[in-house]
Length: 257
Image 1 (cartoon, helix red, strand yellow):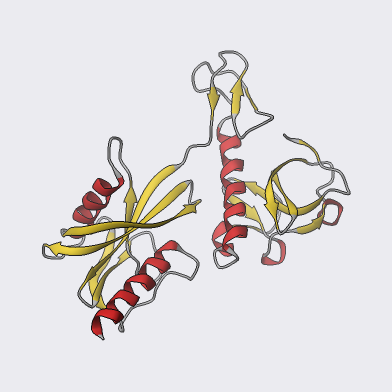
Image 2 (tube, one colour):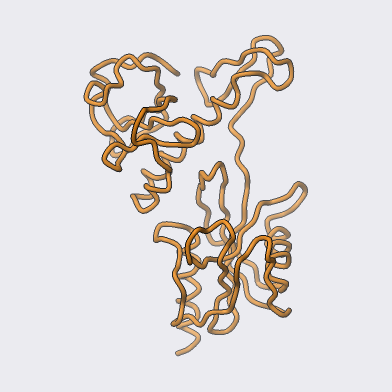
């Protein structure tokens, strides 16, 4: 429930607006509200971290508003809570008005929801399911440099689940669309909330079956098969992509012995 923050309220502070996060000194604010000039602001509790309250304040600050990506190498639990805050702030900002009748909405008191008092419609935060898959061929792994990456990082393939698809069907379709190859032995590994802007990444490993590699130039700048001991620049630690690559490298090493 949202309420006015008092000077003695304390914890971790997620101050977010337009998918940006307030990071004074490059870190999440921590401590009493008074220390950070947040007393009197409207805020809501969205979780707990290391035994302390995590607050969300849907507002902007004149300085030090930055991307959530700056926390990507922090503890996974803290990164996920910060991601929750950024996504919720954007959800509340995007749902001020009812999409059915156009009347003003108000946040729910007991759950993360926006309610319309006029037509009784309710809106929950939407999550976009995605797959991400590491593909192995002998002692090699398929890696690609995506158009959206602004550096030389190579990573595994990924894509959004479409209406009516199973996750396994999404893996097969995305791999074919982006690389022109077929895969087999698709198996689930893990998942990771990915708040860029509101995805849930479901990670898989698969093996090469057939096809000549030809990357989709609209999605990828480059793609290739890389031997496990001669890899390009990889995604940062803590990402599910990095875990998939490291797990695949371990399989390649085991097969090479």
